[in-house]
Structures are given as structure tokens and as C-alpha cells.
Length: 329
Image (cartoon, rainbow, N blue to C red):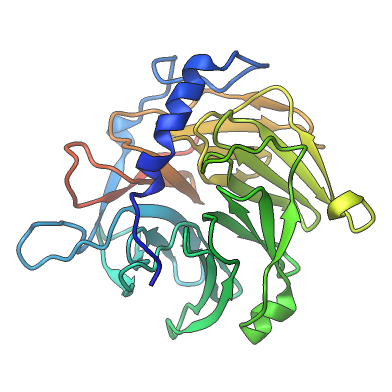
């Protein structure tokens, strides 16, 4: 059983706060808290995670929610949690979100994504990538990257390749479609240094999206820089990495690709980033901010709304919630 630790909400923030004070502004950064923002209170819908009320009679604490994804075939959303890796499944017409896959103490699920009837989850400091059958709930694959890292976000491309970020080790992790089919194998590490500066802490790469099968975009939590990663077997180390100019998202966590826009959960709410067609330049749009947001870690697009996950509550006590907020046109 991997050791428990305080979720990244607490462990990564001290360093980032110092960076925000010391770092000089480069380019056009996404607006910081207190800047002009969009308030959405009147249009917010709240969904409550069941059994997340620590200290309440008859309830079990399954830990803080970390990520969310939308499963169109079942018309439902799934939410991952810290501490025991419990997975919730909710529906838009029901404010009560029940447990779907029961976790095990110490089996963290930080990032999740749904593809081809499977649920993929990163295991944080356990170094695992786990795969579940969405219908049977059975674990059908487990892949270990070893100790000393923290697997945070992941994406599945149209070819079935899986890529995952590591907040501690300066690499991206790769699983092939063949490994997913067999359910076993050793993930391959793709180095990201020296193009992506490395900090000996867990404030490195966090959010990840795939623009194409061969092009990824990642965000570095510490300084907010966005990077375009072009996968190329003929390039040194099998990739070319280019900083994306024009905008940055400090404290960026998981990312959502919404058409030409990146939607970045940035701890304070959602930052909207418009990408150029070649993903070499970005422009920060007005962020989505609201007092209902508490340490926003992830978002998913559903129709004309974003479903957002907050890893904290207003008074510091569970239960935890998912919020539905209007998406900008």
C-alpha cells in the first residue's frame, strides 16, 4: 500500500505562492485573483458527492475530488478522489452523486479520462496508471512507473496511446495500445528536459491535452508556461518541445480542450486560453471566477456548461461538490 500524503492542494501551494511573489511577468499571463472576472453564481448548479462528509454519522470520507470526465454513452460524469481512489458517477438531473467504484485506502486517483469504454486513472505518488472496465467496474490493467514521482494528468489519443504527466520526475509517461489491450507492461519515459525547466519538487508538469495523435500541450504549474510537444521518432529523444508564447497560467492544474480553447483549472477557477491554429501562440480570455469555487482542480465540458471540481469547501469541511457553470460562447 503506498503511503498517504496531503493532497497536492496543500503540498504544491507553498512553492507556487513564493514563485508568484518572485517571478517577473513574462508575456501576457492569465489574470490573477482580484482581476476583472466573470461571476456565475446565479447560474450555478451544485452536485454533492455522497459519503464525503467526514465526521458525520453513517458517512465515510473518500477523500478530496481531483478530476472529472464526461461519459457520453451513459450520459453521466465521473469524479476521481484522493486518499482511496473512489470513483463517483453522477447525472445532470440528480444533485446526489453516488459512489460508483469503491476505492481502497492509499489507492489515489488523481487524473481520470474515459475512452473506448475504459476508465483510465493516474495513481499520484503510487506511480501507477490503472485501467477499469466502465461497465463491469473491474480493473483490467495496472502499469507501474516506480517510486519517486507523482502521476497527475493523462490523455488517451485517437490511436489509443496513453500519455501521463509527472509532477516530480521530468518526463511524460507513455503506454501503447498493445499494452492497454494486454493490461500489463512497463510505461516508457519521454524526457522533457532541458526544454522544460525542472524543479526538484512537485511543481512541474500537471495538465495535459492532445491536439492530435502527435501533438500534445502541457502546463508547468510552477511558472504557468504552456508547452507544445510534437512527437517525432526522428527527433532527439523522440519529441520537439516549444514554449507557447503570449499567455501563461500559473497554478494551472488539469486542462480541457474545448475546440480551439484550452480551459485550465487554475486553483481559483477556470482560465480560458485561445490557441492559434499551430499552437505556437496563446491569448488569455476573461477567466471564470465565482465565490463558489474552492481550489478548482478540473473541468469537463457538457453541452453549454463546464462541470468543475473543487478540492476544498467553503468552511473546510466535507461534503465536497461538483459545480456546473455556463461556458462562454
